[in-house]
Length: 67
Image (tube, one colour):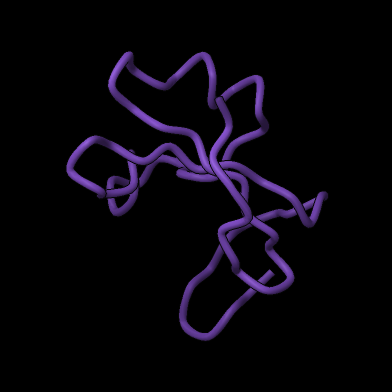
């Protein structure tokens, strides 16, 4: 799926999760590693201080924080 100039990759679900670090930056973004996750994978990779957010990839909107 391509959105503007951002290649998201093979998106099977319109809902994905991102890990946001305490400084507000997206974990793994720009590193060559995937920064979009299933909820299970996001929980495994998130640190204690990180937050997990739900996104709708159709609109690229942040839908809420996962507690």
